Image 1: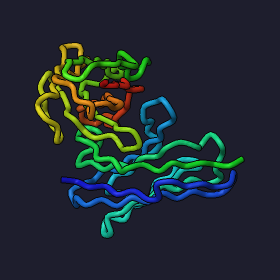
Image 2: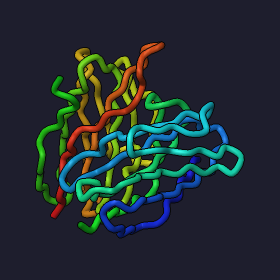
Image 3: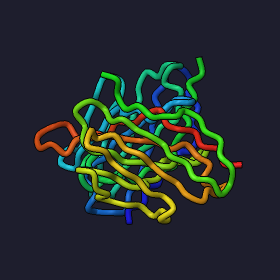
Image 4: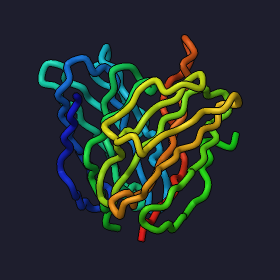
Length: 113
Length: 115
C-alpha cells in the first residue's frame, strides 16, 4: 500500500518568513496530493491540492510543488502569520477525494510574532 | 452550508463496550469515509461508504463496522472496545459525481476515550 513520509515534524519560523514542508510517497499510481491544516480541537481543513498532471499550484501565500519522478511534493507558505500556526498534513490518493487518503505524520508549524 | 457534522463531540466508554458514532455529510456529497487519528499522528483510513455499501476498507479489524443511510449520513460502530481505540474519529465526505469537485471535507471529529 501507499506510504507517505513527512518532514520536518516541527517547524518554528519568525513572522514574515517562509515555511517549507516536504513529503514523499511510495505508490507511483497516486495522482492526487492534498494538504490539510488542523487546528487544535478541529478537523483537518483542506488548504490546497495538486493533481499529477500539474507541477505547481499557487493560491495567494500558499503554493504546492510536485515532482512525480522523485515522488515528492512540498508545501510552501510565504509571509507567514501567527494564524498560520497549526499542524499541517500532506496526503496522497489514487483518485482525488473519492479514494482513501494516506496521510503523512504531520508537521507542527509555530510562527513566532 | 453546514459542512460535515459529527456527533457526539466527546465520548467516554469502558473497555469491552460498544460505541456508535454519527456523521452527516456536506450538502451535495454522497460518499462518506471514516478515519482514526491517534494523538500526534496523521489520520488513518478505516473505510468508505457509497450507495449504502462499503466500497473500500483500510487495515482495521472487523470490530469496526459501518452503515450508510439513504440520506447519505453514516454511522461507525466499534465493538469490544480496547484501550487502544482511544482516538479522534473523523468523518470525511466527498462526491462521486463526474465533473464535480471531489475534494474530501472533514468534520470536527468525535473524541473517543476508552477507560
